[in-house]
Each structure stands twice: as structure tokens, then as C-alpha cells.
Amino acid sequence: MPSKRAVLIGCNYPGTNAALRGCINDVWGMKAILEEYYGFEPSDITILIDTDPQYLRPTGRNMKAKINEMIAAAQDGDVCVLHFSGHGTQIPSLDGDEKDGKDEAICPTDMNVICDDDLRVMLKPLEAKPGVKFTFIADCCHSGTLLDHVTVQISGAKERSRFVDPLSDVRSVCIHPPDCCHSGTLLDHETVQISGAKDGSPPPPQFDLSSLAGMFGTLGEPGGRDFRNRALPFNDLCGMLSQMVGGQVDASNVRSNLGSLFGADSSAKVQQFMQVLQMFTAGNGAKVEGGGGGLLQLLCACLMPSADEGAPSGQPANATSGPGANYVAGNLAEPDLKINLPPAGAKPPVDQQLAADIGILITGCQSHETSADACPSGNPNKAHGALSNALQTVVRKHHQQNPGQPLTYRNLVIGIRDLLAKTGFAQNPCLECSNTNADSPFIVH
Image (cartoon, rainbow, N blue to C red; front, side, top):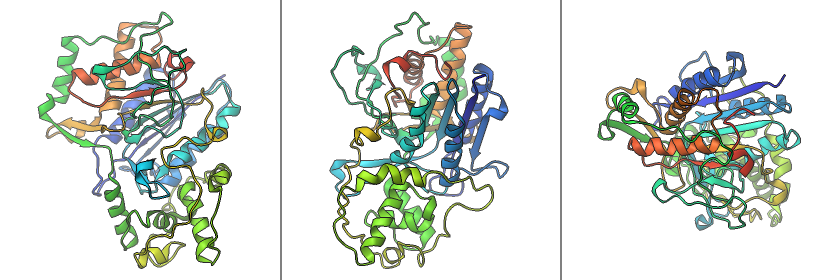
């Protein structure tokens, strides 16, 4: 019998300058939806949160371990759900040329960032399991290219949505949204569509004035809400890393600092840089050509940690040990290693991209927008991510209006965008997946 598995991750970053308020509530809300409408049992759901020691902390190591466990256990016919609520960020491209783009990443509670390459390679084994349905909901900023897919089904502002024939060879570029900011191209699909259902399924849920009044009663009017956004600016990330290592961290040395802090638990992209850096500092400073060619193999080797149930993730944080120590303590710029990698933001080589039908991504906003962490003024206990809350509301409304009828991904995201517009949120969530998956039932087969 097919199995269901979910990994739900909430990072509120308590006690830090990056603190959010609604991410843990998002986890509990998503758990309720999975159990009430999609047949998940509590034992099917793994929860990682950073506000209760009874649960596994969402460190970079633990997050990668639990995602890997879910994918490794999946068999044909199974469904897998990954939901992340927290901060997204961007790391300057390896060649330092920001006009070429930046690497999108999500931020675990320990700031051991997980880059788009890491996520894409963790999902790569699903290509050998084509019957597995994998849904990724990213309620954070900077999540739009996390899976580097090619087809974007829903993109653009709500008031200027475009309609594109799914069979057309016209390729439009989507700008990003999971329930985090900058998440709209996490899968890097190229076809952008907004259209209704093509298979006779019910239309997106309709929200009348009475239901909207109820939401305004819960949320408060737009002017009576407290907002934070789920984008962690790069300078803020560097500030938090600086406190951890006791030295200055900036764009010139961020990768070596991440490598020193987290060692074998760090992003495989960071580890690749550190391997070349060690070669360079050992006197082997020759130009490294084709550095991207072995990236897939390195990623696969680096992304299988076991969850650390009790101890902190990675190496101790200090500025006097680890492979990047000289660049921490001396505030030195990392040398130009001339690693021949594609610029950040560019699609990986074809053989490293995910197959079109692997993974369905719902993002929180477009690349130039932010995803809201919102609550009624003066009541942080009701805080939530705008994407996560709207998704849960649309699912419930659909099942009230259309009992027994499936809700498609396309109609879900159209409904989310409509609800956010009517309740005063500016962000524009997006849907990235194949044409076939867009009109399939949300989560289930």
C-alpha cells in the first residue's frame, strides 16, 4: 500500500536578530491539513522546530538528514511533502560578479545555509522512482530557483497575469515565490501559465464577503497587522556569522567561514570551495578548470549526514581553527580560485537538472517581493506566514464547497493568490512544475 511521508520545518530563530513569529504556527497548521484532508497519520510526519526541545532542531545537518531519509524510503506510488517556513537568503556568486546572480538558499536555525544545488541533488534519486509525488512548499524569500526546473505554471503579478498555451514553445521567465521570499524560481521551469482547470475539476474556491470578514476579524485590517518579511539580507547573515566566529564575515570570506563553522555539515557547494581553497593554500594554486563537472558527485557524497539528535551541528564555532581560519582571524579576502562554475542563477548542466516531473514547488512570492510573516497587532501568538495561512484556508474552503472533489495545484495557487489580494497582501506566490503535475490533485495521486 502506498505510503505518505512529510517533513515539516519551522524556524523562528528565537533570541536572534532574525527572529520571526509565525513559522512554528505554520508547521502546526500544515500538520492539521495533512491529517484532516490527506490521510496522513501523526507517525507519517516528521517535525523540526526551534522553539521546543522535545522536537528535533532544524539545523542544516538535521534538515538534510530528514529530507534524505524521506526520499530514500519512498517507493513508487508514495507521496512526500516538504514544507519549510523561515528565512531565505542569497549568497553572492562564486566569481563575485553579482550581475550574474546569486545562489538562493534557505536558512536553518543555525545559519548553516542549504543552497539550491543541495536541494536539487537530494531530490535526484527520485528520478529512479517516477511514481513518487514530491511536493515542496517554501514559505520564505529567495526560494524561486531552489530546484532548477524549467516550467513555471503560475507567475507574475495578480493584476497582470498572462495566459500561455502549455503546448507553446514560447518560454517565459518566472520570478519567484515559496512561503518565503524570492522563491519563485526554485525549480527553474521556463513555461509560465495562468489558466483555469483543463480537466473538468472544480474551479478555485470562491471567497464571499462573509468569509473574508471572518478572516479580517482574525487577521485585523491590513493597517492593523504587524509584518516582518522572510528574507534574511546577506549583510544580516554575515552579521550573525560574525558573532558565531568572533571575526568579521563579509562577501569576501563568507564561504571559508561557513566551511570553518560547519565542516562536513556545510553546504556541499561550500565544501567544494573549501577543498579547492585547501589545495590553493597548500601551494597548489593552479587554475581549477571545470570545477562544476564534479559538483554532482561531490554533492551526493556530502549530503547524507545522519540527524544529530542531541549535539549541535558541525564543528565548534571559533575563528582559530578550521580550514578557513586565516581568512576569519585576519579578515583577509578569499583568493580568486578561478573555479569554472556556471554563474549563480544560471541553470545547471542538463545532466544535473531534475527531470521535468520530479518535484512540484509552491513558492511564497516573486524574486523582487517578500513573503510576509504577519499577525494581528499585539497578538504574536496568531502569527503565521501569509502563504501557509492562505494555503490552509483555500484547502479548507475547497473541501467545504466541493466535498469529495480533488483540488489541483493550479487551482490551489490561483485561489491563494486571489485570497492574498483580497486580504491586502502584495506577494504573488508561484507554481513551478510540469504541465501534467499542474492539473493533478494537490499532494495525493
